[in-house]
Amino acid sequence: MALVAYIRGSSTGQSLEVQRGKMLQIGVAADHLFEETSSGMDTGRPALNEALKFARKGDVFVITNIDRLARSATGLLAIVQELQSIGVPLRVLDQQIDTGTPRGAAMLQMLPVFAEFETAVRKERQMDGIAKAKEKGTKFGRKAQVTPELAADILRMREGGDLIPDIMQKTGLSKASVYRALELAGKAEGPSDVSLYPRTSNEEEEEE
Image (tube, rainbow, N blue to C red):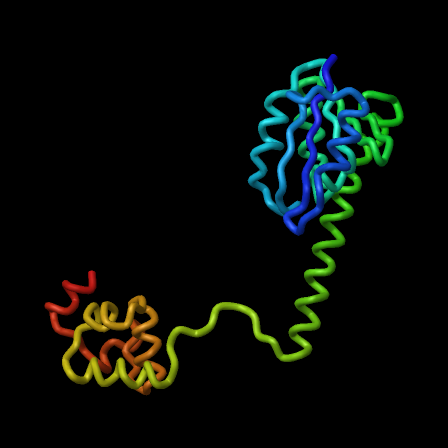
């Protein structure tokens, strides 16, 4: 059995020395110690990925504190499950957790519950935030592409002889948006009212 350790210092300057000292004290070999400095929210942690690949069945994966490994129950569960799939228990020194023991195994069984609870709480907070923002007058959804000013410009283009594809290219709007702009400007030209503004055969060919 070998101890494979992972330690992480924060990008705000948290030192690795204390974590490193704890690992060496319990007998972690220097070449089995993987360390890096990064934000806990950073998903691209090369040292962690390397440590997970290095661990073999029968090894023990060691960290000093849960927050050094993951910032959410969901993230912790994913890593624990990955280790479990290759027969490697997780040992957390500060919280005295070892998934290779009955007590640790019980904790492992509770992780999905914690993850589900965390997701529900996060969703509820998000919905509360949206509701409060709406109360303050914040509007959600995609902003309208066509303004009255743009609609007037499109109408002038059309009356000047521009074809619908030409207007689409100049404005970057879709065909439907161009029609809506013409309707907004008072020139109903949608498919249901095309007779009010007949198109030439050349234009119909270009729009197909």
